[in-house]
Length: 180
Image (cartoon, rainbow, N blue to C red; front, side, top):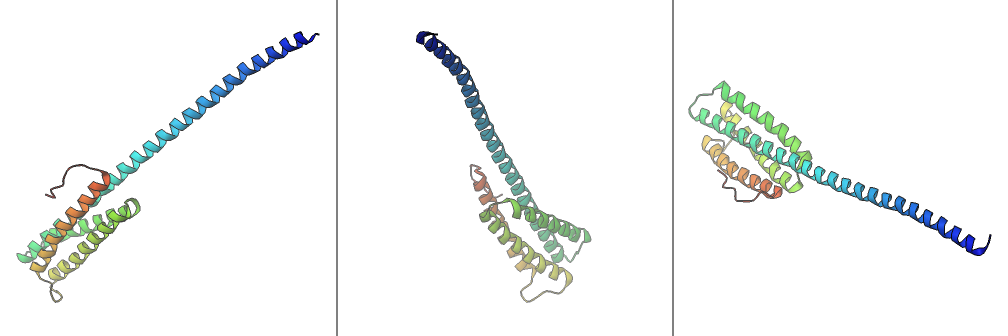
């Protein structure tokens, strides 16, 4: 075989190998691109799922705190009327239990800043609960009065508005929150 035949043969082998190798490399690049796109889609889906879970937790936290405070308010009104309705006490205990459970879940889901504010609200609710129950049982401490309880209730509604505003800000919800 002469050198021109060997050269032609080598060029043909290299051409075929190059054609096959380019197909393999193109396929690998396409696979990498698909994997990157799937990874991006997974990250976007995880971020949406995380936001939906936070939103759900915020809704539950806001709702349970409002119910707890409303139940405390109802018992203060019952104390003022000297109408210690068992139904009012039962609703208060249910609202308190629900809020405790929701707050515990929030401790595992929400950012620290929101959790700090929610913790302040939780402590204030529980402190108010203690005062209202002492009033209801006829064993008040110094300073425990229905008027004092009502002032704390009013302060707590304001605290709940602040907490709700922070949760809305963290979620990126636009517009103002009138708090009503």
